[in-house]
Image 1: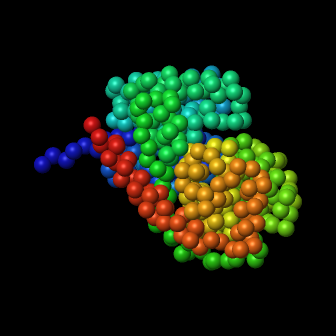
Image 2: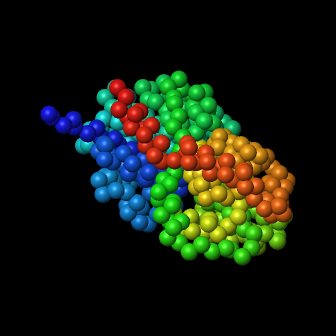
Length: 359
């Protein structure tokens, strides 16, 4: 009996860092036995120095030199030529684009007739509040135009799926998931230490999306509490309160190790896709206090699995409640259970295999 040849899946990702990087590592490694997996990627400041070590040896990595975060006609045109060359060489069956930039370039140059196209926004550009309203309207118009292409949008959360339906008729959603075995191995291998005091932490890029200004305001108004930002970014200068520690970029093992010592996970984002750092904190049974925005409220139900807040006063009230009364054990168990049942990489991989194999 002749063995069926494996399909080739090409992932296009400009934003090779943060939660998208973690997501792609799990998706690529989890599907690499079933498909020939190739990743065409760009480098960012937050890309780990040893990023190649995260991937299985059978995952092929191809750097796209012209992939950049910012809009640049010269660089973007260069990326188009590079991607056309890569696609011609590997002749994939499936092209899966990640983030708005890669999604725009990929859908602009590939029709979806010869290759099956998928696109995961990981947070739409037209939701970014750090850009002007006219620019956001342009980005949404671009999404609507490209949304007519023969391409299926795969949202990574319920809220992002609802947004996707405003720009395309071809969309579905597969929830983000975390690798429980990997997290358990890290938890089992590190010495469990207590920080010795009540600590509030967050994880991620220090940029407009993550709202460091609000994080700093909360810290300034709670000077007796230590706040830790695990990560780095262009807006590091906005974290000026003396009770804030900024760690700089660390690898996932170090993130988990540090988080285990702390009490409350705080997420002040202005918008999200479905944040990996939140899912990891829920699994580690940390009290999660998050902004009431798309992505966060997909997984945190206020009073049931955490707290959703709309302003600094609400954040401070929630943190004070946990500090004074201790964690609500039922709440953190509810959050933990939802990770076990839904938001794990095993479930994510299973759904992607079904989608990739669908004729």
